[in-house]
Amino acid sequence: MDKPAFNDAVIACLGEIHKQLSEAAQIAKAAEACALAGRVPEAITISMNIEQLIYEAGRLHDAASLMHRLAQD
Image (cartoon, rainbow, N blue to C red; front, side):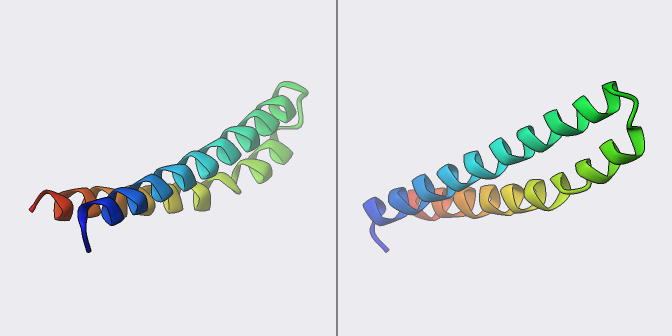
């Protein structure tokens, strides 16, 4: 794979990371609003949806980092 192709793939990964983390931030905001309204059990239930998004963002970051290292060789 040539360097521009690696760069395009890294850009795509970073865009998806942004999407995943933005969604996680929205969920966190909703969970916080529930907690502040005194609905803590509901807030925890809502916040559980953040875990998978953060996991996926981490794996995408791993992939982007690996592609960047491969492009340097």
